[in-house]
Length: 206
Ligand code: CDP
Image 1 (spheres, helix red, strand yellow):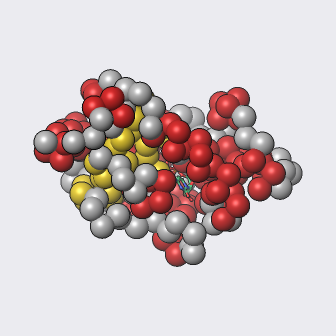
Image 2: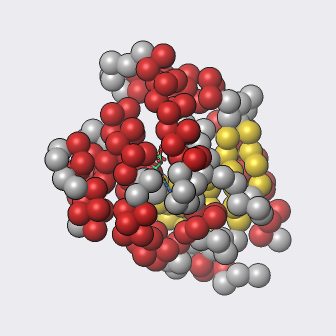
């Protein structure tokens, strides 16, 4: 059994599969800290849209960069998945993520490569997925609910383009770790998905 105070939970999966919602709820229930690693790539992507060079942006990333108010837009999501193929960008973000994963009190990290590359020894690994159409519909409702002027077609195209790029890149491609538990949220409510994640974590930790 791992040191109780340094439990790491890795939650990976494709765009808009529900990782963020599940991770936040799981972290809250367990009293663990949560890191949305996608935000790191989004912050780097956002900087490139303002003219920065990707590797410079990643190596000089500051915590206030994670608070920019455009990070959730589809434009920044695309820019994030473009910088995420660059090995030097990924390397610049590794130490911060690993340190976070080992923090006292337990940590939940969500992303694409947490169970495979960042924390291959994580105590529990989940791979959260859903059909592209379901994911795009959820993301459309989220973005339009936040007042963004987006169409369903545009959001579906964004999700599919990022999935394609994320799965086929040479560096840390999106794929389930061999020991990850798959959770398909296509036909689950948020509550059901969170309950399933919590039950899986409980059984894996025993
Ligand atoms: O919220 P959503 O699932 O749409 O995306 P995100 O988790 O914020 O990630 C944005 C982009 O960052 C992804 O499409 C990936 O290309 C990249 N990313 C990554 O490569 N590795 C991670 N651990 C997290 C995100």
